Length: 104
Image 1 (cartoon, rainbow, N blue to C red):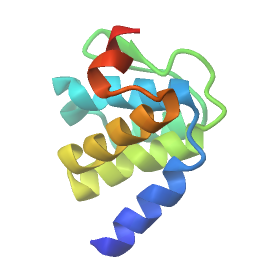
Image 2 (image 1 turned 30 degrees about the vertical axis):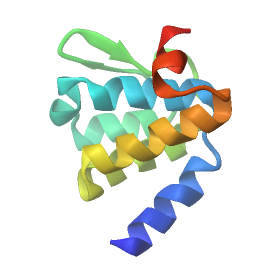
Image 3 (image 1 turned 135 degrees about the vertical axis):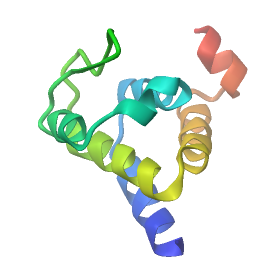
Image 4 (image 1 turned 120 degrees about the vertical axis):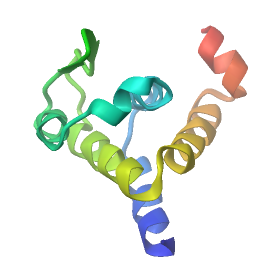
């Protein structure tokens, strides 16, 4: 488990703000449970996906591979664990807490 968290932290260093925000949006929704392996591959190839009528990753992300890896690790490690890490990363990127970052 510790090896996977180390891998997640390495991946997170390559994520940009838009990618982090979109990952958090998907992981906070109940739609993440319905994301397929094929959709994760699509994100890794810099494509957008639609889950139950809602679009995610519509804009081209320069960090598609890292986003796909983060989604796969959320399945492996659990959504709450990865989400918590991403929220902390977003707070450090923006210099604000979660509530402040979401309000922007």
